[in-house]
Length: 431
Image (cartoon, rainbow, N blue to C red; front, side, top):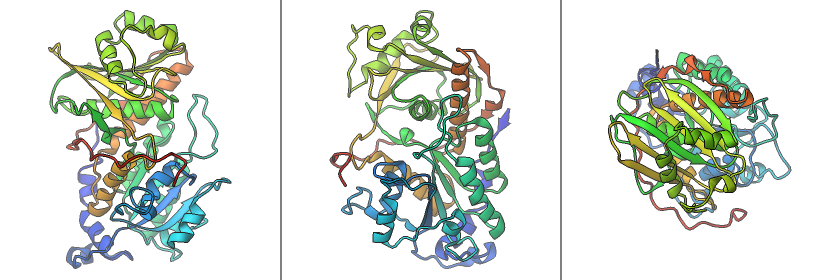
């Protein structure tokens, strides 16, 4: 098995240099950083995004640094300073140029410019890399091919030419395919870049507030999801993974996966591929579109999709995508040698300011201040690889696929806490 230490020793060696960089944004040597006086300057952040428009991921994350956490100028600012912006595309409804002008943030035509501020040397303390949304082609498995590898490669060039690195927060998937995801991850480890990735799902509100017991032996997890298989399927898998990684022994890696569609999904349930009691418990937590126990799911969901993930230690996780019946993510699980079922809803604020993105940025903010990832990048690496394999299985008609490359172990001390209550939601098209 591959034992990955991406969030431990490889990043700890950078803590002292990073403290120095935060105190003196122009950069200091590791020796100087050890004796540099503490200063209250905020980490200088460069945002590298694909597309910046109202309600895009770039907007609901990066705009917090200009418009406060409530996206209306009335809330609290993150303890970060946005000093540059690069957008890969500029759609007709772009909002970045107006916001940047209003808040004195320079927009650069190149990633190198955004990271060096035109000085020729790395001149920022952290990077928000948000490659989500924009007009990009689809892969043969249906995933949007966001230019994550290309954007990361441009960042890496600046690191290598400058002789130092700064933390990167990488939104959502590491990449749309395993080869690119592993290449990006391996580069962060080789260059000792503090690196975090992932979506808002692990940090969401949970109703009722529930979590897997740390160190418990899990038997099975069943989750229900909605939306697209690439974007929202990733969310559902990361929801499952943040629960699974707490089990006895930590993460052990994924042995195999497969994906079924249509009537085969219901037949799989009847054969016991996924536990029907767990399925009903997960459905019972739906709030936006509640499901009555006596409703016929075959009638409600004409084209279901089932993800099945078998882990090395025997844990099975299943995710059912149930369009158009659902509008939320919920999950149920059972520990080994127990009849008790625990279930919960992972809730998002589907109104502006989409407060769940606050918690995502707060995790990145902590890393920008400390130099240590707040949660493990391996979680998102495994999830990215699993989604890629599942969609390949779907393309191949549900063929089971062995995934020896996902034979990855990791542990984490990250712990979920119920977030603070969100502010009142505003219409999504409002400021």
